[in-house]
Length: 312
Ligand code: R5P
Image 1: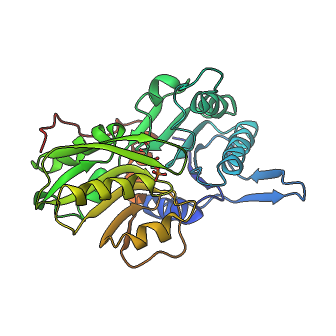
Image 2: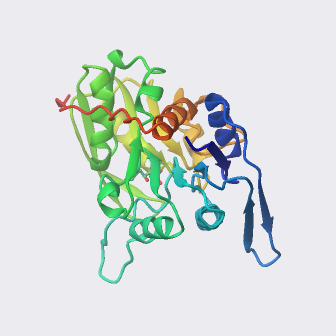
């Protein structure tokens, strides 16, 4: 069997290191040169004939992290790695999975093609925004989920699971597969990259404890808007938020802090240096390590759970 190698991109070396530790894999040295004009040049060592997993999420600056991922893939391919897997726990551009206006690009199609062209045989993601990723990508996609990891930190049986938009309903179903509690959903309209309008709340929240679940928090607009609607519908004020990816741009951390939330759960798909005390980071490393071990041994991966949902 070929040697297992974990390569850490610069986006989240801590996560890559933790995954390597779980697997008992020797860290593989890479050198990343940055030139004054912004160009990157990675060098990888000892990957010839190996089963290589490049761990590189693509949070902001998304284009830099994507370029680095593509260069690392190319470097491994040219160094004759036997098999190359792009482990991209947070995949940027996943919200661009269709044209909403004539003349637009479909970012996720462009970048999955680029990942394949640069040398990846397979792509691993965690709770990607688009459910159509597998169909869009020219290479097989292994979709992992952070839901059981986050759910075990929430007293789910006491809470109504709230999807803050229609796109989050499938994710909410996964939480509901763990708890038999009913669900609720917010209908929202996105006005711009930083603003959303809540249209209606579907479900009964009066006096009940909510947990808002989403794949990602970017500016915090979706959470703030959902929270406003929950207040209007007299939900209990102790609201928990659980999101797989804490992208946190445009002052999102301060915005969420000012909302007075008691508990905001995220994972470490994206690294953060300092967070307010109400934030709890749950590591996705065991989930990634289990999946990599299965792939390395050519074993099947566990399929993420899903279920039908009944409305609150
Ligand atoms: C969009 O549909 C996603 O699932 C999230 O709800 C959204 O990206 C969050 O962005 P923001 O925090 O800027 O509202």
